[in-house]
Image (cartoon, rainbow, N blue to C red; front, side):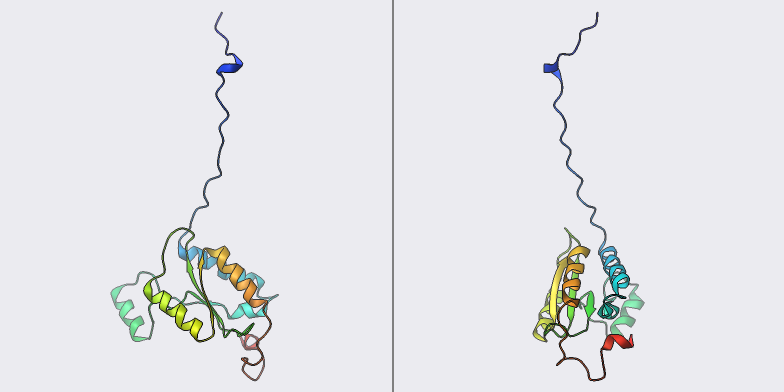
Length: 157
């Protein structure tokens, strides 16, 4: 008769931890934020004004030179929402991945410059943090003293 396993020889149960969330490329984070902005723009018209500044990434040398001639500046924040709310001139977001990527000195300088000019300028790690900042910002009271005479700029977009 073959030997039987007793309860004392059982292996302990494995404890499984959920895997860390995959940290997609920065462009994927930006695409998620823009997709959310488009999805909610019908309810929150200010979201129509949110845009991405395509000043990063790899470029062919000729294209990079052309962009420089056209005025592209290194370090400009990734996402801009130029609507005055809550006493701010606008919202500027420098977006980084969850666990990787540090802001460059140029990016830090732009955040400081925009903050000094009255913008809410923030560094966000991941699309959730960026969306949280945007959602809070668009629900601030309208800064009437900063709006251009002639109605809300988002009605023209």
